[in-house]
Image (cartoon, rainbow, N blue to C red; front, side, top):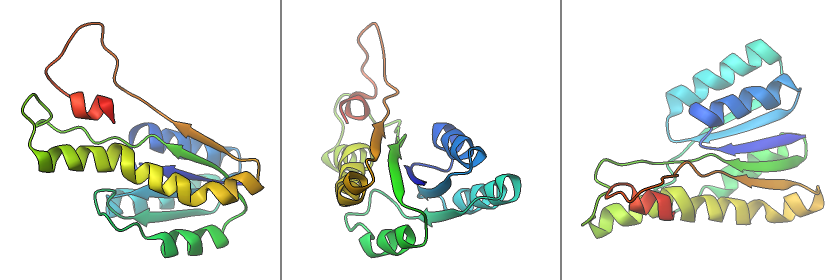
Length: 152
C-alpha cells in the first residue's frame, strides 16, 4: 500500500514518512521545499529500500497539479491513506491580519489539503483507505497570535 503525506518534508510529516517506509509501505511526499523533499526521498530509498516519490509544489498556489498527482499514484501500489500534517505558521498572524495573508494561511493549512483529499476520495473509498488530519494549536489561555492558523 502507499501513503500520500501532505507536508511531508520535515517535522511530523518526515517522521510519518520514515515510519511507513520502515514498514515497507510506499510513500508519496508533498512539500513546497523541493530540496528537502528530494533529500528525504533519497534517504528513505537508501535506508528502507521502498518506493518514494517527492512532489514539490506550493499549497498556496490556487491551481492543484492533479495530473501530476494522478500520474504518481499510478506508479505506486494502491493508495491506502492521505495524511495531512501540513502547517504554515506566519509571524504576521496577529490581530489585524491583512486579507492577503489570511487567504494564504487558510489556503495552505485548510483549503488546499481539503482539495487534495477530495481528489483522492474515490481511490481511498475503493481501497478502504483512511484520511488523517493533524492539529498543532492548543492553549489554555487567550492569545493574539496564530488565530488564522488555529482556525484553519
